[in-house]
Image (cartoon, rainbow, N blue to C red):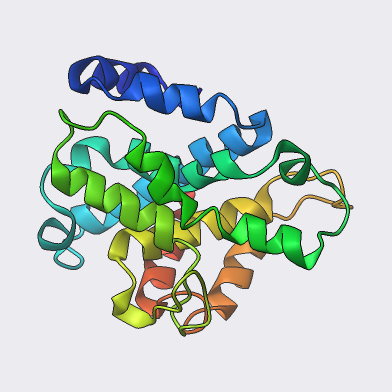
Length: 213
């Protein structure tokens, strides 16, 4: 389950996380661990920006967001609940149909979020969660999915999550990797995507706070 003592307490308060846990428990362990790590990395970037007064985060994300940010970032892949287990665990290459099924986890996030009891959860928090879950595979240059959003059309939370998600994908161990990629190599790879996959300003912020990962 994607949880810790802090989110368990929050779950008891808002009456929502037990259902989230039920959804996430169906995912393979490696996916759940990836979600937790991405939540942590994205939260580090977000809080670094808050500490250094970078951008109008309170205006774009809401004051209440900071209380739940790590948990909400961690749930970016909630739409993977609808991907068949055999595709999630497939080691070899994927067919075009399977690739599309995986891409659809972004739009399917709306279905997952809609199935959750949300009344006690502030509407703004739910909107931010949905925007991250749906748009974290958009690219700053407009070449991403599901809608081909570009630049600041992409919600700021999704832009942050995109970097954290990619970073974890690069540095995490995978059975087909000959060797694990170092943090330094991962930073270089992400820097090369500034202006392409990622917002250049966010790449600089990411680089400045990787010592906290």
